[in-house]
Length: 353
Image (cartoon, rainbow, N blue to C red; front, top):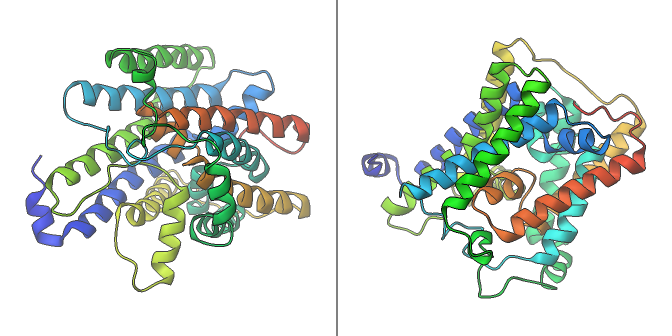
């Protein structure tokens, strides 16, 4: 696919933003229809259940692995210089940040990506939580919380000036990534069969993982055609939420993939909910849920920035390229989420919102 005419017509930065918008729309539609959410899956698992939420998450994760690893084997994609792989990763950040993010998403009753999707469908609780999340993420990136984040992240980092490629570290062939993805997909499909998940929901769950591959594919193409260096990246919502917020607050900000991604998710989710007649204003049910949601949003903003990505950024995008710290962060998010659900005793915390 030749994107040079597009770049020549609108410029490199607008092209990057357009690619972010396309990726976001795909994710927004698929996530809204499949009700994908890491928080829902961890809560369900913590309660000893392997039902539809776990199945949907596994199918999304495996689809991202299959598409990204398959594209790399075919020579259509190269993520060795992706933003998450080309810089040192933080093991300490992945552990501490992952645990904090996981606990926060249970308190907020939704991971950062899910909050964005719900906000677009009229959930005012998610609007408030999402704004707090974005502000905290920005504070953790360049504001008052940045020194604390830097100190924790610097405690234990990957060697060699890059993140760890798990397949290389384990001396596995590149084909192993695709095989692992297919194996997880089989488990997801078996769980889907046992829980009688409809075909359309399975397609949309796969669409969430496909969106991660689309993001990598589009930014890779742009990196090969643009004059200026372009980061190869995909779905994540910690940094993009902060960058999008600053784009609308600072007139000197420039268009980039991140700035297109967040509005794309909102647009896709809104259109999906509109067509399905699922738009509905919802608020807080009381002071305790509101307090928990606000605390959880702060924890996710700081934890996600420390971990190097949110439940989508580290859990799906980072996981699909086998970035070592991303897999560790994802594991700690599961632990943090399940631990918080146990602490709360599952009271007033439905597995899905």
